[in-house]
Picture 1 (cartoon, rainbow, N blue to C red):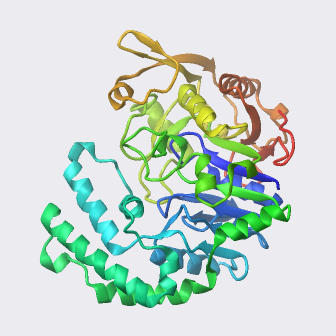
Picture 2: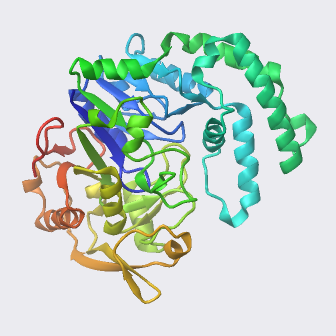
Picture 3: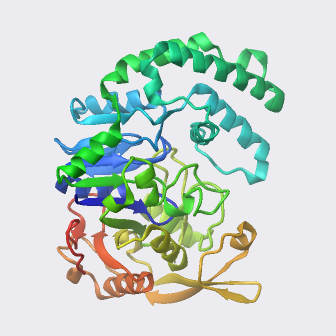
Length: 436
């Protein structure tokens, strides 16, 4: 039962889409296990670029079964739009695409609640994408959410929807002062979502059975995470986090498989660090160097288009991710973005209030006040270009990569130095032993 979890080891946007696409050439099934359409996984095939939000990256490999697991929250409007866009570009879904009946729906009132809540937070706003992800997860935990499978029972859907809309309209009026003409109508939502039910019903099923049956048959399964470890609701920079379990443990909960069925965890890291939205970022560069990283790396959100905050590689933060995910090896991406930098800096510890800190703290006030302790390394003047192996790297680039791996205490499993599939060195067998 070979299986692999791919997880972001920073604040998301590490390049998971490309790495998953690369690995799906060896997989029979890819399962997305958390998040919603706030994710943006970019895959470049030849001259074509695909940005995937809900659909697993394996959909771009013919014959690979793709699953949206129960841990995902689904906006059916966004999903249908994404499926139609992919279908127009020749991607097929019949027989190989499944949506969990236990995944939860995002409804129009979830977006409204998120929008109004962010207004009230002012300078402490989280910087959400405004897509209703958090409120949908909140309803799930509060046991008033509506599951995707409920769309298949029209009477039950109307009954639960009516109760929820009445409660939500009262909430929006009383807490946020939303005007009467901006409240929600049950019939309008019901009619809209019954249309989605007709479109999506062929794909809705118990996907835990699909995934476990595949493992029982000895098929190779990849569990695809969204966002990153430091956006995890438990292990991230709370409260500036997403609303789901973005760590490797979420793969089990979010797809309905037991932990003993996971063979290996691959962490994705950029050769530097980025973050989108609000929250602490110890190595952030708010100067020309940070702007240069943004410009050379094309650091703008695949989902929102927002410019990403950029900074040096934070080994303390990634070591935290290695521990809480049980990461076996890393895929390092975007090494080419560092072409031409005279000096590269690596954060190896923090200083706070006269103390030296070598573990990632949980206290949000401490996180905001940390001063990074840097180790400097020489950059390289040339360009990496298209290399055949790690041994072809410029000596300074090889030394930089080797030092990062030494600090993290894991193997280097994949090295990526461009957006294309072929700009990658695969250094391990996903279902065997890692190499370096």
